[in-house]
Image (cartoon, rainbow, N blue to C red; front, top):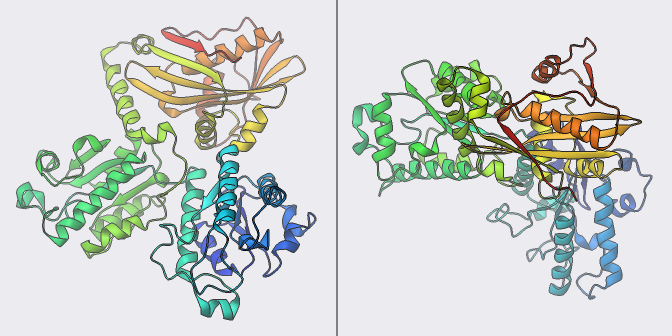
Amino acid sequence: MSIKNSHILILSDTNQSNFSSYLSKYIKDAKVVTTPFNQLMQVLINPTHAVWQQHYALIIFWANPKSLFPDLEKTLIGKHEMLHVKNFFLRLIDKAERVLFTGFENYPNGFYSQFENISSHNRYALNMMLTSISMESPGVVSYLPGYYSPVVKGLHAVSEDLWYLSKTAWHRTVTDRMASFVADMWKQWHGLSVKLIITDLDDTLWGGIVGDDGWEQLRLGGHDAVGESFSDTQQQLLIWKKRGILLAIASKNDEETALQAIDRHPEMKLRKADFSTWRINWEDKALNIQSIITELNIGAQHTLFMDDNPVERYRVAQAFPDMIVPNLPANKLEVPAFLRSLSCIPATGVLTNEDMHRAELYVAEQQRKNSMTAFSGIDEWIQSLNTVVSIEKLSHQNLTRAAQLLNKTNQMNLRTRRLSEDALWNWSQTPGQAFYTAHVHDKFGDAGLTGLIGVSIHDDELFVEDFVLSCRVMGRGIEETLMNFIISLMTEWQLSNVKVACLLTPKNKPCRDFFSRYLLSDSHEWVFDSKARFVVSGIQCNVIDFN
């Protein structure tokens, strides 16, 4: 993966070269900077140090908490020391888009001598302080899993050999696992994680060939090691589905026979309702997969394909170079653990309401598309949807979803501006600037927060900084509704006109085409005065009180 700002700083009092190498492996093109061994405090207290000349996408603090306060295991920490530690972390927030740190905890017996135990009082007080910082800075500061967390649990964590040879505190298995954990969070922050899993059926979701054996004879669940492993594979897919990842089927099979197995087999963890769509036929799988991702409007780079057959995997990987096509273990008993180890599917991170209900959103969208056939024209169809657009100012409650939409949307995106949650919030609170969100609902369901507007005042002009709309609601009159709202702001604020300037990208042609329908311009700039009206019927627009 490649991100515009991929600078990562590791602040540590031990040798983190192994951790740095693993991070670079999992986050390609990341520029990882580490502090020299035994130089942590020299870096922290020197604001002119070379590491502070760069703003970081991520700062990782993985160090002995005694680096900040040497007497943690002896003295009860007071208000002065607590403020010292808190101010340290607050300064880090100013230097990065995100900060990760380990919690304060005791380390296992036999660990190297500089990590004496912290008193329980101090440990509790410091962890509560870090929790409060996280709550005050949503999406900016997060915990890294510590020694006793499930991420590290069960591993041979401490390596005395590495400590004495190179002052490396943790075993490579731990640094590898931690780097994978960070990469998972990184992908979710930058919208690079898997959104869709397309799976085969025979010998992938169950054991056996349903067309030959019949669904009653499939190996699935029960008192059978292989059957139990297939059941656990389905359980893992179900967990991911509940986290907002869509599931689909691409299988060479008779559709009626395969669906009968899904509906009737008592050990099936997944049922038809868990799959957003399927292609069960004898056609080329690559063509079926192309049909699926087109229907769901999800790119190949956000799609994972599961198939036990290496020939089919090779065919799909060749057809879609950006698609994730893992080589599933031939031993079926190893597949569940293999799936849990995949770093391309985040196991952690912030989930919005839209993430958790993504499957339902796609089902509703398919119902909308099917309803179009009953109407002779687009205007009549739009009126039939009974759409309600609710517009409100950016708030802490909708900040996470707003930043997610701003950073992931490409097609209906006026200027393709990318901002972290913190940067977006600070921008919206600057005088002369405002940011609004649009929530769309119709008779088929709630599409969620799917529109964004960012405006700023320049002299006597209202400049549109951001005009963003999810592809799920494009072409349904929402664009016109948002523009009418912008013009109403211009009138309310007694400004002379609205200026829209599009920054061209390879993907935002739909946005340019929308504005060009109203005023043609070779320079891709449009100016609207108070008389401008964008005609749309059948949509109710509710502007929520901003006071």
